[in-house]
Length: 500
Image 1 (tube, rainbow, N blue to C red):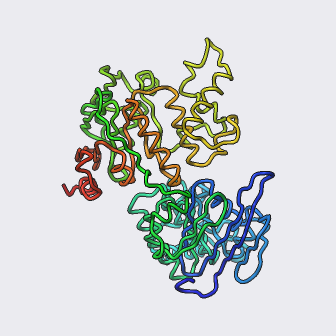
Image 2: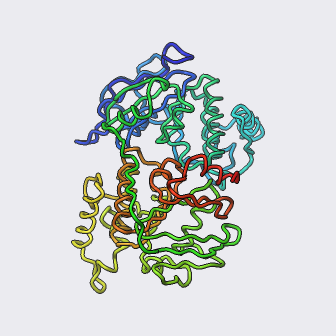
Image 3: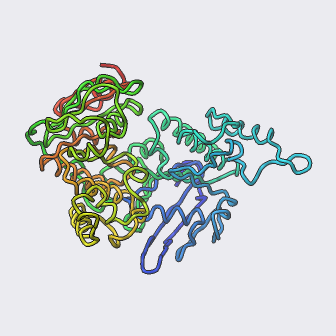
């Protein structure tokens, strides 16, 4: 039962959805109360997205009951659910860049003046009033193009409030936000709760769930598992319920003796971004680049791989200096790079799994100008087995895979090229806890096989659990180097914020 309401505003019981022989959702059940934040948790593929799409009216349910505001409902599209007061804020907001903020909020519902002309003054006034209620400062006249992801989400929330939404679904809202932006979002969530809005919060970050949610529903393999008050369930119980097993091996780190130096970075500088960066990574070693968002971590990785030019300094791989900035030179030197944004930078989303896996190995797979399909398929099949990839056919497009399996395809692409050094930028962002464990196992196996690993992560437990050394960045400079035996969350954060 909610703290603030006796009867739930939304109830789903035994809801199922089929696509031919594929069961996307077998038994979805959830209750949402006004004035409450309710977490929906589960691994990728657990059925969360399908449940949300049924709530939003994107899919009709094939079985089960959907009761909203005391009435059985059968929405025939997203417009029906929006009219009823249900808003879904997706991880990637969908605003029109060429319209201003107020126009995006009231698109298709603009207040009218005399002669049925759009009353832009009233539209701006109402938009400002909503932002004041949310406690955020966004100019309604500003174009949507160029807004940060955090501000785009605030516009989506304002749009929901302008429609008097009673249920707001937030799908991975913090995935691309800085800590400061996350805090602002949580303040907005608290404001929405005070207004009596029911919040459905979907996240892989369990610490956030404990901070802002009052109840949690867990799904596994397309079915409801349990609902608990957040104070009545511990993290290890949540994890066990999500994956069906005890995940004591979330960080399967094997401590081994490091080998010869693979990467040496000396006095690397890119004006305005990072300055005088020097460090090395040895064979079999996992070195983590830590620091707050904007500290220069990703920019250093991009410079090492040759995506971005640097103004001074040098990059040496296996004793040979890389001449000039070029990803092709970096690949020939034995460097692989798993980028932060797997969808935009790591994969060709409408290519098949096999095509994507083979992309970094075309030179080895081709014979003259010919690339044999059988060689490409065999390579992909081998790595799909090694990385425990879940897929239908190897020819399936990458966009059909879950986020965790997409990440495995990116890893497979680079590992197939047999790198001496692999750079992994936010390797487990946006993937479920079970797949995180598998990705950590892959990284640990790489280190054991003698590959040097440079890992960038915003998750301190991941850094402390996997790294042999932690390099802490602050405002474009290397603030501290901490050995595994000395590393703590407090020490890393103090270095990242300039307290040591």
